[in-house]
Length: 335
Image (tube, rainbow, N blue to C red; front, side):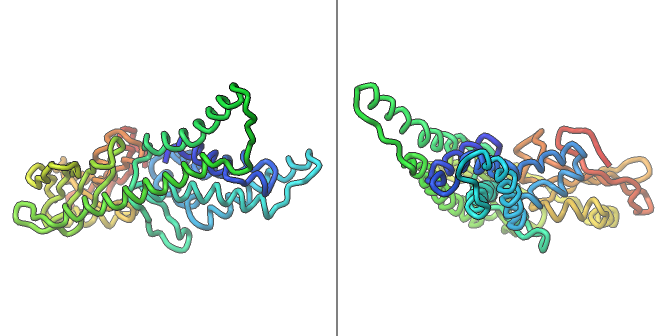
């Protein structure tokens, strides 16, 4: 998720009674809820550093606990200004809630997180929401702002408004977001089943996935791998709309070759293929060799997005790798 969603979600969480457990709960939870995205700074060092760092250490279970501990430790000296000091354990638990919510939200995306880093390099992704889902933001803002508006109205007509330690609007909004994700999951399973139940030009799917679109939970982007192709197509779950596998955008896999195999076995190829879920290779003949480009069809629908990293490997006529690099989808090449 992008920072706006994380900030609003952290604010809603902080309003769920954490103020009773420790002072400065709100700024601590919001800080912990945003801190993990500092890994975006790795992009300043280029695509390779970005691929190695983004959604890894700061988005793991261990990294989440470390973030919570650091933020809590930073706020303890600030709390000395108050008569009642901030204790580490309540502060740590509040920060852990904020950092944990960040991890859960990013787990719903298609990019994924390395939950078990550094013990495992496996990526976990639920494919339930885009990085910016307007419905999630609207639900959270409504839960935060509508109760405040009602309080202003009651105070205007002379009724006394009592502030509660637990903001029911925030609790309701977070619960509604949870139900929204549950509904997304059910719809995703329907879309995936639809993709998996068909044949594509006489071929059965090897693997399928349905990726979310931000406008409506009823529309998904399907990617299907067969023996010879990758198919990208729209899946609508709207009533009365029939699924048409013939409407797919077809990407043909290149023929097996020693040059392609060497590209896949290069350091850059290995790093990219560990991350990619639907890696499509393009082999171009050049003077003195071949240029092999690897891209992940998960992000093909997001042209120009920073997370659309591609691997470009040059192999000479002797099938030796002479150049390899990662590139952002719209950026300059960086070795």
